[in-house]
Image 1: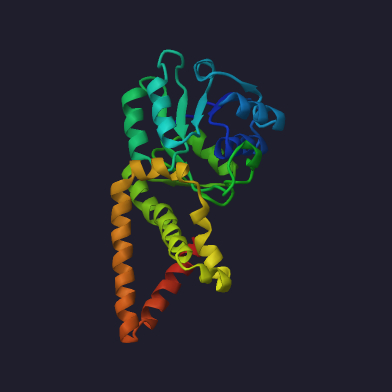
Image 2: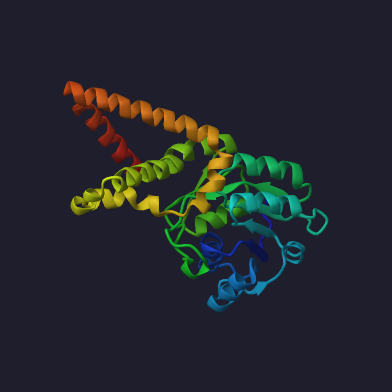
Length: 273
């Protein structure tokens, strides 16, 4: 397990997650240099906000970095791994913040020949995107999944207020299909059903608002998730459809109370964790 202190961190993709990670490191006491790798407009905004200290192309940033943090969309992370020149950095730890892990970890195993790669996924976010919405406290109290161990990385994740969870890539993808990807599809389906009944808007209350919030998420965020985790999402959908069919049967039999009680305990357990 590495104990090498970080002096230079490079963040590729200085948007909401990457920018928040940079701000969180600063708030947690990181005194080294933070380099931003992003579009010209994004790095200008990040420099103006003090999110990063310098903007460089990835090749130049990688050559001096102790940590390379890939906070891009999934397909961009995959292409970045393909483009990384193993000769421009030595001993750097590379991690990512992608929402699925199997495809990224597999690509890294093929491409990262020097240094080390650990898949990562902070279970945090906002409806708003971009570095202007970056928040040093975004990860506080949230699970932060890593696919393998590293003492320095884990220590900084705890310092930014997150809770480290170690899962292999396949197990991560199976679980987040249920806890993250399925809720998005449920919200999308419900909002679509309500949109087919315009009069429903006249009587919609807080429950409808809460349950359809995720339906406003832009599809470009989800395109890569669906394409890289389709099998696990399909299994989660099948389990959910079976549960709905069971509820439908119980409702017809007037025997749904026990299911409500089991579900309520499950919801309480989720909140305790």
